[in-house]
Length: 369
Image (cartoon, rainbow, N blue to C red):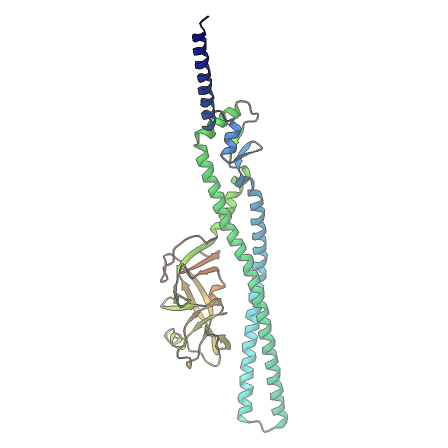
């Protein structure tokens, strides 16, 4: 035996073993020795039935359940909303008639009624009308409060439709990328060498079957972003009225209706008179004024146009008054004001916006999350 030679062989053997171990470790680090199931897990895929699906896909059933609940609530509230709108309209018509009778009786009193019985009768009728008008105002106030609740379900439904569509489409794009991933395809081949029935890469049947339905609901929702100008924390937007006059109006979500100055009303050919109901209007500075209720043929902001919009024509005495874009237009939308970005986000169900951007230059985009 050659002791020197044996020592040399032992040293070489130990070195080879170390190098082999290092090679195996490196191979494991590169995923070469990873089991096919481990590869699928590393890619975010979970075995569900005969499919390997993403966790977002696995949770799609719960997302769809919430979406359907939101749609059911919106459909139910839409019927209630229409009933509420009709009640408000009827109440306002009645209040308009009561106010007309109230003014006529006051004019009669002012002219003088010689007969005491008739005089007292007129005063009694005036008091009754005042009571009715107060009750009418309270009725309208309560119904408008209900309308705000109905708006909440509409906003929840629109948000759910937009977010679920985006999520489902994002999951599909991820599957498309995974289908081209060599590690995934090789792992699936190895798995299916023994698997019975054969395993498949998602999407799940639930996702593919419901995508068309969700996209159809999303297709009924039109959304856009309109640019705002914000000066001294006051947002303003370009508004086109009756298709012919464009004005910069203060965006006032606290105002129940659009407020039109006397000057703009003249340009529009609107002449408020005694036949038009008196409405109490709170201006942006908090001041209360009596205005005349009238209706605008159309109001367009960006690519959206609303017809037959209630407005309040302000009195001539308000020289420094400004035009306000209020609730009679905004309530037709789910909207969000982003003063920092200078944007008004609008979304509406069931009505396609007009072609082109209009005077306000709207850009077709998604509603924000």
